[in-house]
Image 1 (cartoon, rainbow, N blue to C red):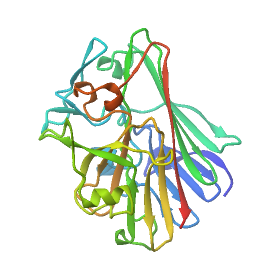
Image 2: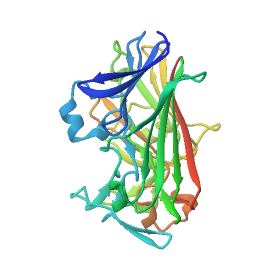
Image 3: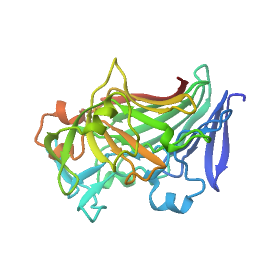
Image 4: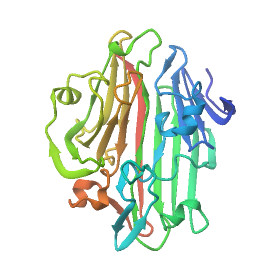
Length: 330
């Protein structure tokens, strides 16, 4: 397959198709800037849960497919918090907990600002420039830009995120991705053939509103196996929050298919200081290892910023994070 970037359609939606060697990736700019497919075409592997056959479910809950953008990630108590002297009021969109959940960008159309190919691979870049006329400004009253570039090489999918405070006041930078990994990714395998590890540290205790108490709770035997050795992504129902604990400079999830003899690696930037793991009540078809800069409800947790991961960008400052997905033989 030649390297290329094409305008295409996906389940009737406007799409950008990246192709390079054995791999292809599909981005839906108008559907939350969601990269919904990363595939090894030669081997028939599909690494992400795709919405192609479930577009009605994708419409209801886009965060359960592909790589949805969370800004800010996860839950915030009553949708209210204060950072650098400014109080933010986010819409309460999870009535069961009376929290704000998952931010603003997963349902917005994202402008494509660049695409093409170069020595690194086939790429597409999407960006929002937020100012007083942007719909996000009502709840996040800052001038800032957020861009995401996906580059497809002959061996991996690279995601580079850049957030810049272009305004004149300090701005919280709170980001995550609700990445939906398909299990199994190989068509001839089953979920029983798959185990995963994740570079977690401690598990944050969550209260009845799914918000951190600021305390840790002991890891159970399955979670210990997540750290080393491996465990089924569906060993129990998970909606769990962890600190990240990189190993040998890598902050990553590794999904191993023993039957196919292949492991899929999601290696995220060290700037993501926390993980969520959600597996749809151990449903057996996909799970979401979710990297986050900050812990859930970070501004309302009475812990230091170097623990919560709360990043505050001063005027003119920026945050950049680069992550990578790839597969390798055992």
